[in-house]
Image (cartoon, one colour):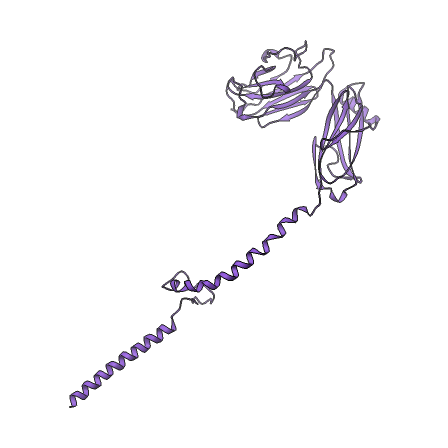
Length: 351
């Protein structure tokens, strides 16, 4: 039976201010989305009455005994809200909830387990998510070279892939443009190319973005700005990771994949070898085939009327002229012998 479970967890600090859970992770059966201060868990598939979902610290992935939060998936879809609905959720590990029964900020994973045991259903991998102690908002607006867009104009996905080969633009700069804001801190931005050393960039102050983020987060004090990050285009396949530096942490906000490869590289290998081997063998072998035609000529109907003439004649399987001449000569010789015998008998009668 197909079941869909949506789990919304309202997260409040002891001070009463909202803290944000950000990021999303997805599997075929289990989807976890963290957004706007709530955690939503969606489960789809066919399950037994003792199949269950378990939550763990990220470091415990692969060891599914001792979950920090769990419940049976059940036979019907439902919605759980913590801590209001804590009577329907079972927890057995202290230290990961605050005094109000809320999950503390950190990195976690969740997994679906079978039949009151610890084996993942359908060998699925755990789904990872993070709860942060602040709210945030962002926009991934543009990827440009020479002021020409190489991705969408606004609303680019968290992982953006540039379809165009940037080799003709080798040596120019690629530009990443957008904005970011939160209610905690924002020191600067940074970019790592192919996992290399962080290259830092100062915020691009913009009052309109500050006002916009205040409205989104419903806070009077926010930290927000635009970012404009430039980096040289070099040859190869590249991954640019863009970070907002929030306090002591590097917060990944955008990943852009692009390539700068010489265009004719893929065409070199296929254009060489095929010309030598095919031209030798076919020109020598057919000379030998007449040795086999004598066997083929003893009555064969498979080739009759199928070749060149268009009139149904077979050019290779017709009468043998030498054989016909031999037969004719034999007949004439026999006839001459018979005639000679008859003449000799007639002469004998006259005597």
